[in-house]
Image 1 (spheres, helix red, strand yellow):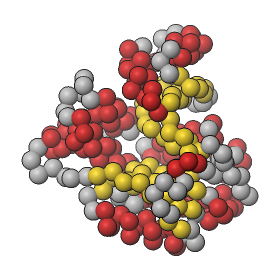
Image 2: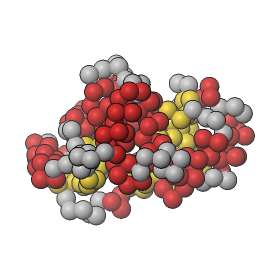
Image 3: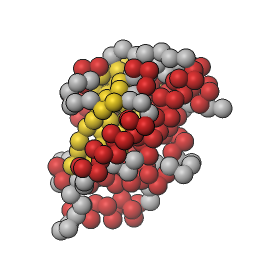
Length: 251
């Protein structure tokens, strides 16, 4: 879990500074759209919308872009997005779980299948690999915003469904909760005044597969190809993210 957390944080930081920023903005706007479609425009009663807006702010999206997205999603003629998932195997036996938000299911299915095929992988049936992952709430918190000792925060959050807490050593703390406690943890962190830079539901692999460095890099390249597709929101896999692999990525 720690390796996947580090890799997620690396991708988040890279996305704020390179050409992927526009793609990240697009994904954030879709998240806002879906949140409004399912729960309305009132942030107080719609925690999914609060999270989506907080995530957009965390990637430095301009306020006017966020307000425009809210207005568009709540008006007539708004884009009609739906959420769909895909499961399959990439090369070297690595399992992938892909979450998408799309307005054209046929296009998305064709694109995901093509990416798998070009990588000598295979698209599976829904539900075939879901058992390999555990869904958890993941919250990235700015350490400087924590108003008490880390140990005190940890004890307090246990009452609200804390699973584990990891101090990343780069100014951030990552908090994990069970899927069922995601909303409770969101509210608890808000009440404590912590600055949550990103909150999301992740599929954490129950067991990981360690590969030689060059093979592992090919898996991360495949992950990036999926993420470059306009309909893909999140990509999960069960590759072991080793310290050696992270060092290679950060070169």
